[in-house]
Image (cartoon, rainbow, N blue to C red; front, side):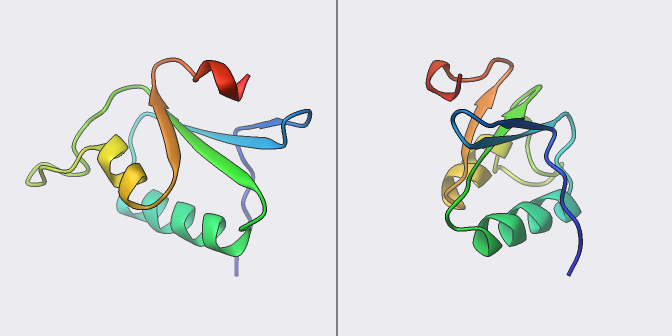
Length: 82
């Protein structure tokens, strides 16, 4: 068990925002663990770019999030988050 501190928390909406430039395998494992361990909370990801998860993969950051049930956006937060 470890600690998790989100980049941003919007208390009025109860939304936790995690921002990433680089989304490593360790980051991906952490986000799966955090979302599974806190099913009543809403976590979203905001990326600088929609890169591939690694050089040899065809999966992008947003595709990975969608497959893992995590809302995400690139460059700007979604209007409904705010």
